[in-house]
Length: 331
Image 1 (cartoon, rainbow, N blue to C red):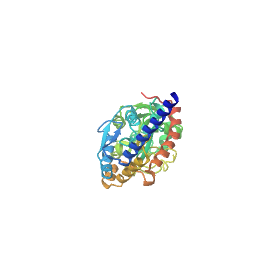
Image 2: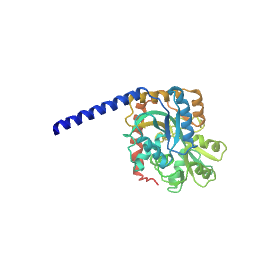
Image 3: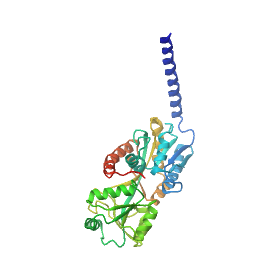
Image 4: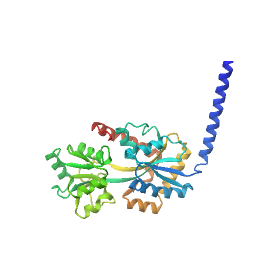
């Protein structure tokens, strides 16, 4: 009797699983049939939120459904990313924003209830924001080599303004220390806006920020820009030399934007979402608005889910040792 019961239960379970799989496959084939939500892990009205709304509007054209943007701010984007990690793997809830923070740095400094690699499905690598080394106008050096020489002559004197421990500006500063053999202090602010104000006022020595935010102050002479932390110059700051031109080719970093879904999303759904992003990135209006925000769209061959997965792995391999050596802890 027990053997018959166990056989019956196995048969029933297999039938239920087959039915669920069939229904899920049917749902995937009909995707999308209802609104899609893009979760932004940062404040509503902020630059990431604005960016996501531009992307959502363009994605709607090929998906044929409404794409909603919802802000779930907190813990450097990890609350929003966690919401996506726990969502159903059906493609209707996605994480959009600075993957450098949510899917690289946060995994090294937070005790997260999810894994930044295993619990997500890559959808698309979208764009980059170039970071620039900015200094107060009173700084005696006129270029990056001169600044590095000044830092070496004045160890632990200079103050770099950041938006807090583990922020991209902080991590970029750690890279600057590593590549130049210098040491300086990190001064945390509640955002780079107030930090930039204090740099203009000369209360801190330097900071690392996106060129689109700082170039008006550079062009007015209120602060100096030494280098773009990239192999090439930034469209938003064409007059500023690249790290390679400045003589520090290892000084490369960027703020990259991406879309991730929960793990287990069916491949045909991933392909539809990835295709919608690719189509959106050819939209002239989107391209113009992204350019106005300082974003550089990645080439088509780097927009795929596979390219994002490979890039994320490379970023983790590069940054986690630097972050963990510095023993950064989230506050």
